[in-house]
Image 1 (cartoon, rainbow, N blue to C red):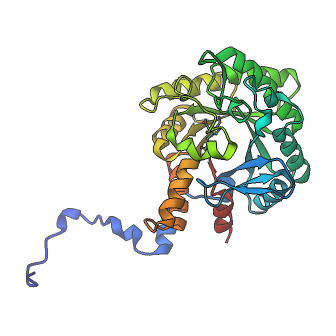
Image 2: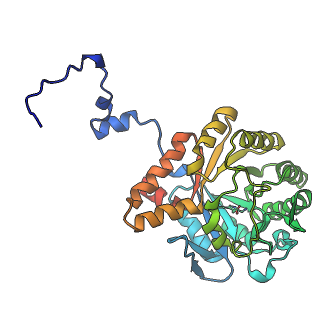
Image 3: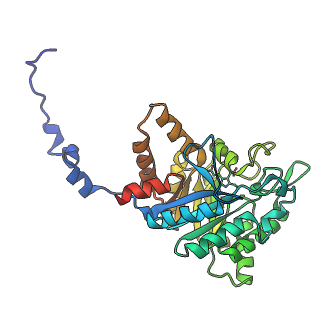
Amino acid sequence: MSTNWPRHDMSFLNGHRPRRLRQAQWVRDLVAETVLTPADLIWPMFVIEGRNEKTSIATMPGVDRLSIDLAVEAAKQARDAGIPALALFPNTPGELRTSDGREAFNPDNLMCRALSAIKSAVPEIGLIADVALDEYSSDGQDGLVRDGEILNDETVDVMVKSAIVQARAGADVIAPSDMMDGRVGAIRRALDAERFEQTLIMSYSAKYASCFYGPFRDAVGSGSRLIGDKKTYQLDFANSDEALREVAADLDEGADMVMVKPGMPYLDLVQRVKAEFSVPTFAYQVSGEYAMIEFAGAAGAINRDAAVMESLLGFKRAGCDGILTYFALEAARRLGE
Ligand code: PBG
């Protein structure tokens, strides 16, 4: 390399030097457009029967299924770290899973007992209850199945009953994750009729038929039961206009908040939804996304701790009001340091 080349004429920059804004941490902080705080985080939690029980999930290193007493303790930690809400998912014992999914509306089911135990011990934290049949059904599908077909309206009837027992048990937010047509409207009407006008609905509005849910299905025990796929109800990942129509329908039916799911490969949807509707918009950094970061970190391919925070900030930058993430407790604690 020659060292005596002339210095290039940079006058074409006309004084613009974008790197000035990046020269030191203080100025980077000063001009940062997006911040992540513990109040942006929702912590999904898997509950199991038993006392002082904790079981690990091979495909989600670092996440445990918790018995209700331990879930209560975890809820206190979440509250202390500034997390505003938890999203609960039950791993229903196998013998209670039936093809009619009736355990979903048993007022004494695992989910309802978890909701009421956490609500009475930690009333300040918001409780988001997933409503879908895969956590209760022997078929692993989110809907009722007849001759291989997923039944829409019959499923909605069961979901409405499930939502009502959850609201009675202490759920602050009902979160239908099943993608049946009309479920938001049916749940809203039923809640209102039962004087649960204040119970919120966070709809999984733009939920795609995704391979990234694999580890979750291990966590709730639906994966090994699932025959076929969920493509007749969850969205085709080639589409985004279709997702906007789903969001519009859910808002029209009474959803207070909407969600995009999965998260990282779908941030274009977050941006479109927020721009189009200006409503509280959430995204779910799902189990497979969690697993990618954990396993890539463990393999030394990426800096795991940095990847956690970078991925979460990306959701905020895209326009999310909040993020459902298995990293919530860790991230909230790091943000609070
Ligand atoms: C159930 C439900 C799923 C997830 C949340 N609720 C799985 C599915 O639809 O198959 C996935 C969450 C995750 O992967 O972390 N209806």
